[in-house]
Image (tube, rainbow, N blue to C red; front, side, top):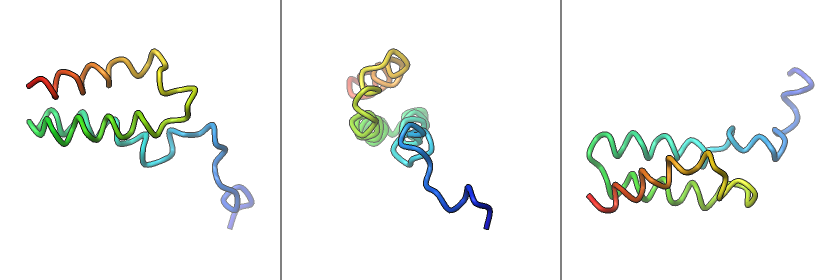
Length: 72
C-alpha cells in the first residue's frame, strides 16, 4: 500500500466526502422532478459542509436550486 494511502485526506478536502457529493446528487434529483428529495439532499449537504464553507459564495447556486425545488 502506498504511504499516502495510509493516511486519511486532510479535513480541508471536504469535497472528497459523501456530503459534498450530495449537492450534485440533489441537483440531479431535482432535474428528475424529485423536487422534495433533491432539495432535502442539498439542504443536508450544505448543513454538513465545514462551517467556513456553509455560506460561501459558491453555495449560492445550490441554495437557489433548493429554494426553487421547494417552491415547485
